[in-house]
Image (cartoon, rainbow, N blue to C red; front, top):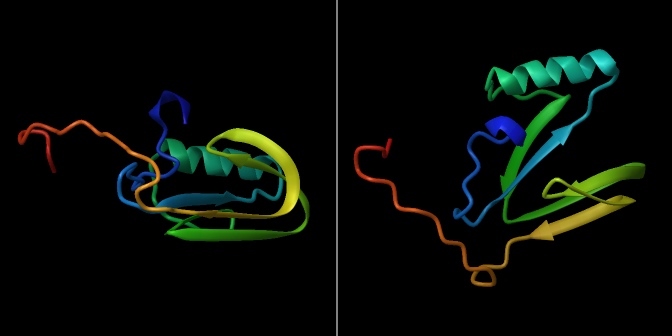
Length: 102
């Protein structure tokens, strides 16, 4: 997200896992609650904001729903499947100096 907001605080680009967030506010106030939780960097989840990881993810909605892939809008749909295919994409990440590792 912009401004370094941690929607998926435990996500790692090179761990071989897909990181998924499901956001389902009921009303406008629900968006405020979700935004405050993300800004406060809370990892707690509930039925309005939930996070998942896995090598394969299949999402099925009850009706046509706006969707995004990696933050980019795609067509509305009722189902989407994504999976990790090891070795298909080379990912390079910087090595942290020993003083910065946690």
